[in-house]
Image 1 (tube, rainbow, N blue to C red):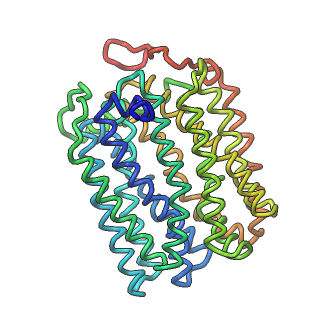
Image 2 (tube, rainbow, N blue to C red):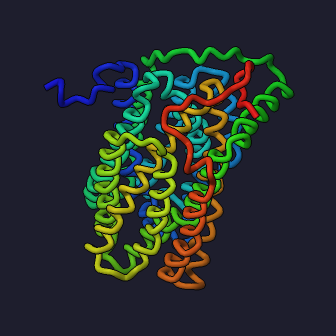
Length: 420
């Protein structure tokens, strides 16, 4: 029986604790992913309102992510994640009560998602930096693939669970479940004992804080494969993902029969993601980032598939293909980042990653609704892929992206900074 359990779970007990808590939280996230747009529509919100609420949860990433990266390199990362989980528990519980009692308005949802997004902004850089502290270097790819597997499984189970909860209790009941998963994740984080980073926090003060931030940026700009990948991901998040967050649910409500059909498409994407993570777990690559860039190009086709007008079953199958590609990209990207960036600066580098991708995403979310109102939903979806695909392919033109190896250690100077 033990042979059925992945070796990284059997041999890395601290990672196992983290993995269990995050798996529960991911399931709740996937339920929320389906429930929130329909919660907005349930209070008579429009397509633009769906985008506004989604953007409200992401604007704080733009404002606070760089601060969060410095904090996560100074203070215990798992404690930052714990506080974030507790705040998000409170937000989702409040939203659930408002929806269940019929008191929710679009304004309520915008404000509460803003608080949620602030907590989320502090969680993400800490989470990226924490993984190398709870798993050995040789198992980072396996750990990232397993985390991706949990996220992908959540994409399958979450929408199915969300569909049932939406039918039985409405969006409020679905979001109540999400709140409980944040509480469970916090309980697992409370008992986590990661290794120390070995970095000595600098003296307190504004200049020291800005010095830390500048050092993080130096780690980004000195590596062409890092900043080029971040730019390509930024385009993916700003141009392509609004098709999933905003226009997909609206199109499903209008043409596909509602939440159940959209849940089918999201679940199909999740099935593909499971396959992609299974491949990533076993795959041994000498040039992982080149493969990741190719996978990102495939992933940009999400938007045109959703807007293609094809039968629902065809859309679901093609979304499964893009799901495999997207999951493969993120596993490989996170692994090379954790392998080639010094641990004491990892959260700061990750914060620039989130800033240039997730942090800019509200721009796309806010514009997706108005543009689709003017040009039509299907036309807008096709244009999203037409804009993003060349940017993803251009990533393969960067020599460092094609040449970066899986296991070569980064070259650093005596202070731990990248060598020229």
